[in-house]
Length: 84
Image 1: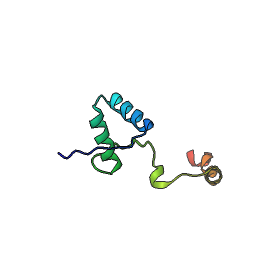
Image 2: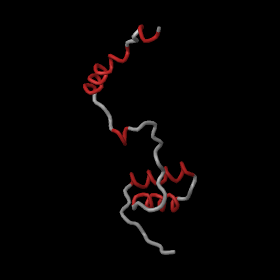
Image 3: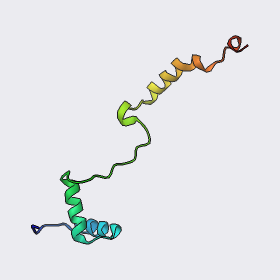
Image 4: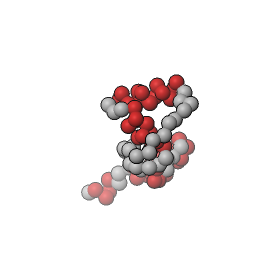
């Protein structure tokens, strides 16, 4: 395998790398490789669990939600004649 040296690492980057290494229980080298793969768009990416369809259908702002509620309000009432 090829080896490279990375120079100019800021203390903030070093701290973050050491923290990730400690948190994941891996060596600094493995943590750095994982971050490089992730940053370069290589390998597996952990997908965030999504609990709704907002990325597919979008979201409503407050005004749109109020307008929707006003338009479907007619469906909230029960026609007693239909249930006899």
